[in-house]
Every structure is written in structure tokens, then in C-alpha cells.
Image 1 (cartoon, rainbow, N blue to C red):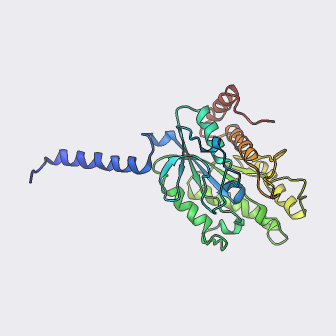
Image 2: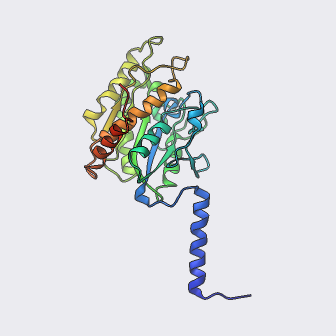
Image 3: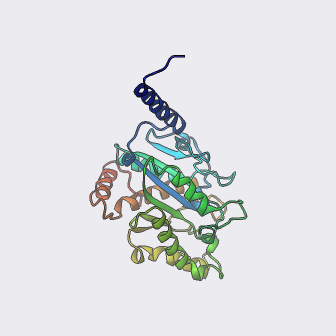
Length: 289
């Protein structure tokens, strides 16, 4: 048996370890600050229920998704795996726009949405019986597994339908504000951007007073909590079920989330959002009005 010098053995072990991690994650070499992580959370309209088309299967070279097994792969729809009906959502378009606007970074999308989950299940120990999952705890586990690799840049949230009732809507404001504070404390980022999307506005299914109340909470969020944004669902269409957006609308929603993110003022980086927004406009990637 040949004995290697100690220094060579250590170097060989280190190289082997790096190779193993790189192969497992399927990510190109990237510095932590250049891997921008985005958490996709909420319920089914964040997970996406749009019909997958050929364009949704084309991967961008710098947009990756964290799989159910917590490894990285090029992002193609469906990103989520909460239910068998998962399809096109807003995440892929969001990631592609930010990647095009900032060619020096890799975008890492972390899908954690759970269809049908009320905000109550997004608390420590919260359980969602429909999917037999713990949305909040599972989410923290997934994000924590990659925080050493990249930098968490924002939380994208789309949820509220399951709380639009007489029991939950009156306390939704408190629950949402507590959720944001809990996420920020957990990830040790007091100004972590939090972007909330508006529930679907479909003429075939008029809103009642409870859905109006939840919507008011969403719309008032930027005025009440710093570094948050609200994304409108104006002029978007449903897929025929009067609940979920169609594929084109999900892509548009992704564009709107991307625009909202770039417009947020971040005390840690006063120039990044404005620079990205200018880049988006030059590429004509901004929201379609």
C-alpha cells in the first residue's frame, strides 16, 4: 500500500469533496454572493396550475430550481411538487427575467408552496392534512439546506384563498405580519424583501366580504411593513376553474413580481434594484401593462 504525504492526502480529500458536492448539486461554480436564492411560498397559485407548454420546458442557463430531493437542476415547469396537478407557475418567468437583467448571477428558486394551505399551517409545527405536510417547517428545512451555497434575496408569497372565510379573514392581517417577522428573524435579515401577489379577480366568481378583507391586507402591506411589495392581478385570466390562473397569466404574474422586486428599496444595496430595473427596461422585460 502506497502512503501519500499528509499534505497531498488532505488536498486530494478536499478536491474529492468539492467534486462530490458539485456533481450532486448540478450547479456551475458560483460564489455565495452570486447565487441569488428566492423562496416561493404560499398555496396553489404560487405552486402553479397552468398547462405546461413547450416554452415552459426550455431551461435558462442561469436559472435553477431546488428539487424535492434538495438538489439543484435547471428550472423547467412544473417547479413545484406539492400535488400531482402542479404545472406552470410564476417562478420560472420571474427567475429568467432577473437572470437576464443581471448576467453576473445565478438564480436559485426554492419551491415551497402547498396547494390549499391556510396561513395557520405556515407556523412552527403547523400541519396541512390535505397534503400531509408541515408547510412552514418543511420550508425552513429546504431553505436552510442551501443557505451556505447562496444568498436569500426575497420571499415571494401568493396565498389567501384558504383564509377568505368568516373564521380566518378577521385575523389574517395579524397572521401575515407575524409570518413576515418570523421569516426575517429565522433568516437573520430584518429587511428581507417580501412580495405578496393579489388573488385572482375573475368576473365569473365575484369576491365576498371575506375575500375583500384578505385583499385589503395584501394591498395595505407596503404601507404597514417596510421592504414589502404588492403585485396586482388586474386583467389576468383563470384556467377555466375560476380559481387558478392560466399559463399566460402566470407568466405575466412572474413579470410583475420581478418588477416589484427590482423596485423595492433595500438599505443594504441602494443601487442594485435601480440598476436591475434599468436593465429590465432596456431588455423590454418589465411588466406588460
